[in-house]
Image (cartoon, rainbow, N blue to C red):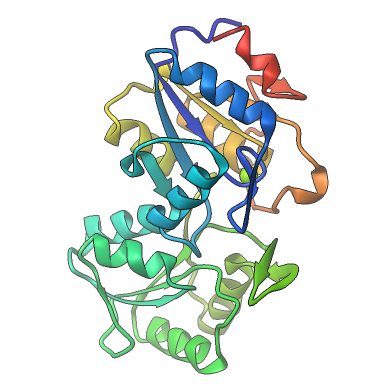
Length: 268
Ligand SMILES: [Mg+2]
């Protein structure tokens, strides 16, 4: 397999480069591949489904892990959702459920993050401090015509919140409550949605054919990468740490599957 022609390498973060954004311990094989790629004439980027942190915060986490890249090369589901809304309603009034990360990406895009009607879009990221009144207000706004965006699509995920190590209900499950109450379906913005993979490649100025995506998750990284037409590399990690996503009928078979990212080095 010849990967030497690939000019853009897009990496997943959680369980691929580092354990997760709350435990930024790097995987040694990922660090070795990253260092080899840094010596080549390629661009390194990140595309993560994390929506509870902003692009800036994700950048801090991977830098802590030893993965250096410009903050402009970090793409999150929150930033992708902001771009999605901005492209439809510039300056839209948005009610955002989230832990602050998505809000930061929304404000950076020029969107109006507010808790007061009228609301154009309700956007939901993982939020472990969400209250009943927030959920109820979000539901009311959707009933009154606001668009409903799910930032990423995890059903649940492991993490740390207020010092508590646990598994937490994800944004897809929170949004399901709003969908159930309103009869309105959400737009899920995050991997495996192929548009966000295509957008990442386009914004960085590359062609699909010269790009490759690397991740641990067949349902998000591989399914999204395949649907966008990229070469996909799956690295096998601890199955217990693979977050659950809905990939529907998308193809979850990677172009290349490896036990360790060390196995990729001889092809680059
Ligand atoms: Mg992952």
